Picture 1 (cartoon, rainbow, N blue to C red):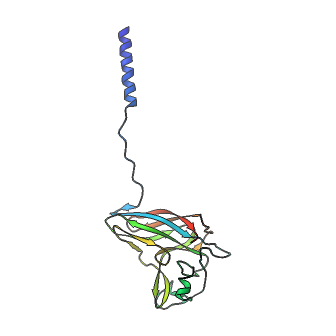
Picture 2 (cartoon, rainbow, N blue to C red; picture 1 turned 120 degrees about the horizontal axis):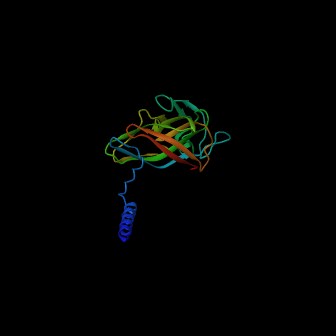
Picture 3 (cartoon, rainbow, N blue to C red; picture 1 turned 45 degrees about the vertical axis):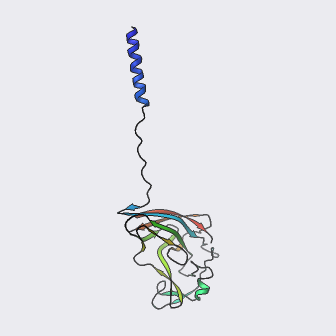
Amino acid sequence: MNLYRVLFALAGALALAACTATSPTTPAAPANTGATGGATIQISDPWARAMKMEGGAMGGMEQPTMAPASGGGYGGMEPTKAPEQGMGHGGHGGMDMDMGGANSAAYMVIRNTGSEADKLIAASTDAAKTVELHTVIEEGGMMRMRQVEGGIDIPANGQVELKPGGFHVMLIGLTRDLNAGDKVELTLTFEKAGEIPVTAEVRQP
């Protein structure tokens, strides 16, 4: 009888040891940073300009008229203000615009830590009717805003800053007010890294 008790206790101890044994830890999956085909894209400090749909602009953005421009500009248009008035005193990256409805812009730093170059080819958001990639250039003594054809190149092991007065994501025809502190959900589409979701904080510069 004692032998059965000993065997029973031994079996219970072995079962307990098996249940409490530590199994190998499975490594956590890497975060989705848009790593594909040798290009690894990382987004930092995304933000968008504050803007009211009606009753005035925020963040220094104005809505002036546009005049035809030869050989460039937004759809062949350029601001009627002089560069020091447009670029130096508010507006979209200092650039004043009138594209129908309220407009804003999103900025960020795009870093490519991979061994291959990539390209930002599109962006989207439900906060605007139309989203385009734009830049601001000086041409003929005027500061002109142009849509970027073909996308924005992101070099291998390098970065590109989207900032006022340079490359930016243009939000045309806002669907809601963008108040300081709000969040804007963007989806950036890269040639190699694919789609990367980004949350931009609305700021009033």
